[in-house]
Structures are given as structure tokens and as C-alpha cells.
Image (cartoon, rainbow, N blue to C red; front, side, top):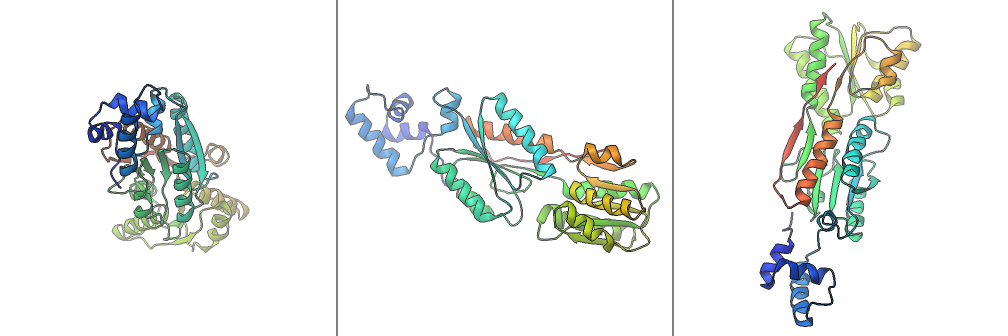
Length: 313
């Protein structure tokens, strides 16, 4: 990312105090015209844009944070978003929520829109193939959720560890014909990483892989459930949506089997007994994202990556 100039930097370049720069930014009539022009010239030359969020925290204006979700009907993202909103409201920060629909161009569009509205702090839900280059163009505060980036503060999940834990749970219960319903490999995290973890477990324990890959929605899960071959002792689903589709299929064919999935769905757990799932840390991810963003707003520009822990039910 380009250098993020602060009021302190501008004051140093102008050889004036920070309070003087603040008065110029707030159009204080008590500032002399000579000083105003001097400070404004430096501001224009370096492309400085005042940190709206930081000003808001000091009561100068209403604090606003932009949030770019992948899709609003995602069960996992909804849980994370709920935690984010709770944390932001606690700080009296107003969120602006937009949807990328897994489209890089939409992310770039939304970031540009936020910039035009002087929103300088954002939380972005990552996805494949969202590139780091697009995110690096943002000059304000940023935290990414669900994707790991070396140069950007992020909160990401243990996709491989979660699949391995669920597979191990089935294996220790004596199941050897474990099917897997997952997401296409175009999705780096929910797709490729989780599928690879399943395949690695099968290889280590000399199990025959039995899997089908599809899109991330309930109907796709239902339609592809039939692709799992027999014999089939138990089924592992990569997401809650796929698990719902799988349950529908198994119930229709009166062939219920032990089922495990990543995430939590109280309604599904109420109607289907003996489900194995795990708390993937969606709420923790939301809380951490806000914590990291607030640190940046208050001046800590250290890039930090945090891996969210999961908890097996």
C-alpha cells in the first residue's frame, strides 16, 4: 500500500503543530491565510485525506466503517457480520454494508465508492480469486476476513485443520467409507484447501476417496449428493448449506447416515439427531476484525494476521 500520511506527518512537513493542521482541516477562521495556504499546499501535494474514522472517534463527525461481504445469504458470513455489527455499535460506529457477490470488479467499485464518501476504514470478506493487488490500492485502514494476505491485516480460518478434525472423529468411531461433499477448487479456502485436507486424510489412513464437488448452495448440495458412491458409511460436508442439501437427499431416500459439517445450524441440529459439527470461529473472526481495525484507526499501522481456532462439538 502507498504511504498513509497522518496529521503528524503533515505537521512535520509544514513545520507547524498538529493542532494547526487540524484547524486547517476543520476550516477554523482563526488560522491566518498564509498558514492555511502553506498547509493546504502540502496536503494537496502528498494527496493527504484526513482519517475520517479517527476524527470521528474524537467527536469531530459521525464514525463510519465500510463492510464488503461476499454474499448476504451466507450462513457463516452472517454469523461473522453479526459479531462485527455488535462490536461497531458498541463503539457508536455506523456500518455501510455492500455485497461483492464474489466479483473482484465489485470489490474495486465498492472501495472507490467508499473513498468518494470519505470512508477510510473497511472490512472485506475475502474470496477466491480476490487478488491482493486490488486490495493494495486502498490507502486507508483495512482488515480482510477469510483470506490470508502477507501485506494486509487479516483474520483467517483453519480450513484444513477443521476437515482433518471431523474426519478423525469419524475414523475413531470406526467408519472407513467416508464420503465428502465439497466446493469446486476455484474457491481456494472453502473449496481447494478443504478438499485437499480430505484427500490427505484418506491417503494417510489408506481410505478410498469418495467425493463430489459442487457450488456453494443448498440446491447444489442436494443435486450432487447422489454422486457419492456406495458403500457409504458416513458423510462429511464442507459447509452448512451443503449439509442441508445432503440431509434433504438422505431423508428422501430413507438412507440417513452419520453426518458432519463445518459450521453450526441450530435448526438443522434440532431436526437431525447425532450431527457432528464444529464452531468454526465465525464470531471470533468478527470480533478480531473490529479489534484490528480500531487499532489502525487509532494509529497502529502494524500488519497483523490472526488464525481463528475452531472447536469440535
